Image 1: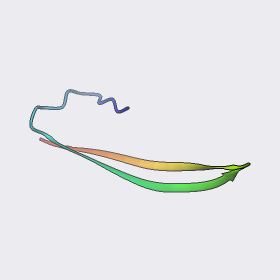
Image 2: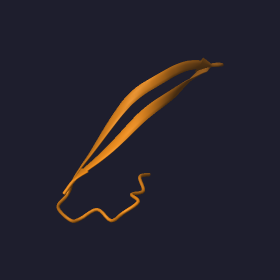
Image 3: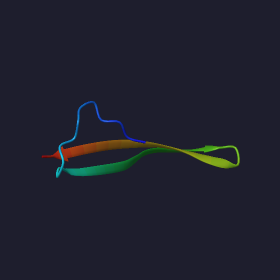
Length: 42
């Protein structure tokens, strides 16, 4: 779920960039931390 602090104008380009920042073993599973950047042109 993404919430923008201001309205995004109609026709704007919205891009998302996701980078894996960290991976840890947690018992039988894995925990992943992401860095997320959202850019709006318009």
